[in-house]
Amino acid sequence: MIVLNGKETALAVREELRVEIEGLKEKFGRAPGLAVILVGEDPASKVYVRNKEIACEKAGIVSTAYKIDAGVSQDELEDLILKLNNDDSVDGILLQLPLPKGLDSQKCLELIDPGKDVDGFHPVNVGKLMLGLPGFRSCTPAGIITLLERYNLPTSGKKAVVIGRSNIVGKPLAMMLMQYGDFANATVTVCHSRTAGLAEEVKGADFVFAAIGIPKFVKKEMVKDGAVVVDVGINRTDEGLVGDCDYEAIKETAKAMTPVPGGVGPMTIAQLLANTVEAFKNHNS
Ligand code: NDP
View 1 (cartoon, rainbow, N blue to C red):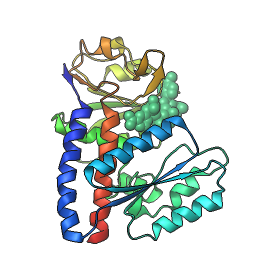
View 2: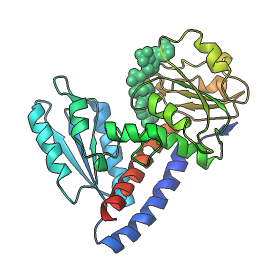
View 3: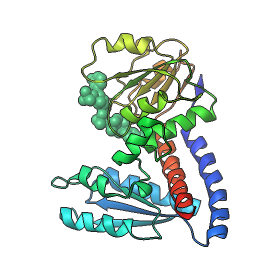
View 4: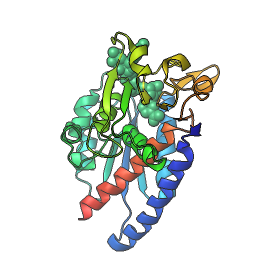
């Protein structure tokens, strides 16, 4: 079985970006800038933000973290977003989710300038994805497509099952897989908690994408021999970090599969850097 090593692939992508950023800095006289807003003390969010900061620093992106007290008001948070929208040194704005209770994350996301929306969550960018127009793509699904490209596993003409219909993973991934292109052109089925006969749907798939949030939800018996399995899940358990798929069992019969950790997670960060570089180039063009 081919292990889809997201850690190595992401490092390769990040190195390519580092080289590109060096050239961009020389050409435009400044480095790409990413503003990261972290509200409150959620431990997982703090780790994600730290990892993003480190990755930015290594690639030559200036990342500025705005660490804000959980007691911030909606108005204050919106003011900060508007200020960053107007700051020419900021190419990308990332609002780390989830926000503490009482804050309206959708309203905040919609305030971010779509040209700086490097997470690809703004309705304008979501709409552009739907229409197949250029725009920022949600980092996790876009990172998954890059991983398939790098391992030359085209989805064109294949049956793909996406389990999960969240706005940040399942839906945009399904939308990307049904666009035109070698690493798209799939016949896509989206499953969720109300899907009847989910196991049979998954069994028919050449590509299985699991974004559920339940440890080892996808079992070996559910997956066709020779399928490609992409596990998005990150579940903290007594065994440590576990994906949504039973890796040890499925790896016996799958053609290729992502491990957890070291699969999709690192690709998400690499895509964030790629989107930030894209935003920088757009601002300078
Ligand atoms: P959400 O909780 O937003 O969505 C989960 C989806 O799974 C929902 O659509 C839900 O269905 C579906 N689901 C839940 N239970 C079942 C079930 N029993 N059968 C079928 N479908 C079910 O999660 P996210 O999409 O945000 O994240 C999914 C996983 O991916 C999590 O483990 C998360 O930590 C991880 N993740 C990893 C990232 C990475 O970079 N590697 C990035 C983002 C997320 P319904 O809509 O009907 O409720």
